[in-house]
Image (cartoon, rainbow, N blue to C red; front, side, top):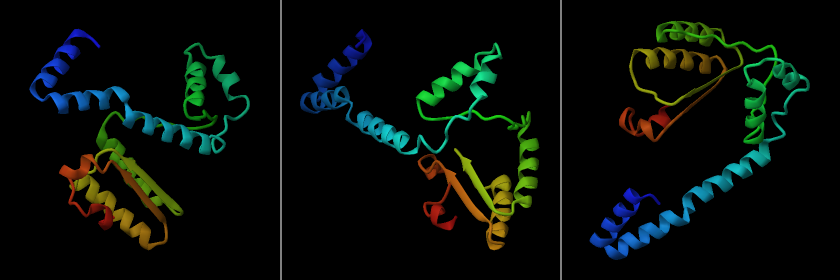
Length: 164
């Protein structure tokens, strides 16, 4: 530990000795992190076969001097995030541009819609998206939304997950 951390722990232990020592022992054993790491490793082991790295992609990436192939090799070691050929990415310099394109694509969906957002808050944007999602679900489209529930405690009603 650095001196500032030691000083903080010494202060905490001086104020509440038993609780401070227990808390220090708990943080030093790193129980929570080890459990999460074990679970993550287990999930990687169970799913690593699902996204195999296609043949030849890394060889093509190694011709590029940007070092992308090294990044892909690293990601494959730490969780099976394969790179693929013939894919597209669209850059939207403004959120309004992304929103317009998203609405267009949502309306065209026929089989499934899978959305993942870190932050969802009720308002014009999410209300517009939700309206399309409800319409598409009524048409038999498989609609799934994943969002960070911890952060949403302050921005959404408590029963929002059930509402969705």
